[in-house]
Length: 270
Image 1 (tube, rainbow, N blue to C red):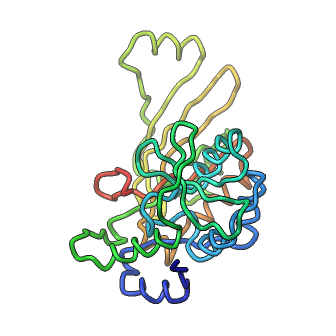
Image 2: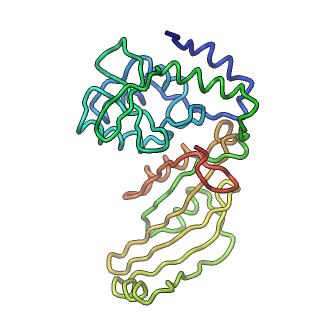
Image 3: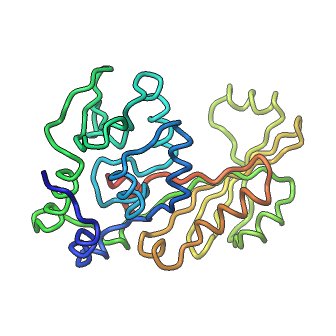
């Protein structure tokens, strides 16, 4: 059985660095993942996370979103406590690793609540992906052509504080968003909700902000997506800064990362 040497693996993918993205987790972040699902991860999978993390597009099929990883493993834990879910094949087959046998490195399928062997190990999986990278017939997108998308939801009645703290540049005036359907118009009127939109810039990226004002609760919520190309993400990312500002300065607000997308088509790359 082949066992991946991660130092050698990193050396072999070096020529493809401009076409790959990965963000290693820290020991504390891995421990947080384990705590979130009340399970202990296999040591070889921990090593993978410490080298490549969850937000990665190196390995096709692995969950590339922390929230999805936690959510899916929450479902799994209700049925099976001795496995961890790491991804899927794009259909109804979910990939599992055993957590109760440190010698077992096989990947298992979870289909219709039944667990079956796939016939290959986690190491085989990585080796196959490395071979695909070296195969010229596979089209690789440059990191400038891929983005990581974040969704921000900020609750505040101090619009200027939001604008100033994140460094948002408004490039036009707010426009009220009036629904086309009468039942929606009636609903918003009954709930005393007004919705406005505006185009703006954040870190030189165009964003579209929606502002929902609720007169009954005297609250205003701003929502928008922010993206960075994977090239920027690896060299001059503002994601962590914006997350700390949103979650640290504004109560009842959130900063959630989505998957990796094709920058042109806004569709998931994987």
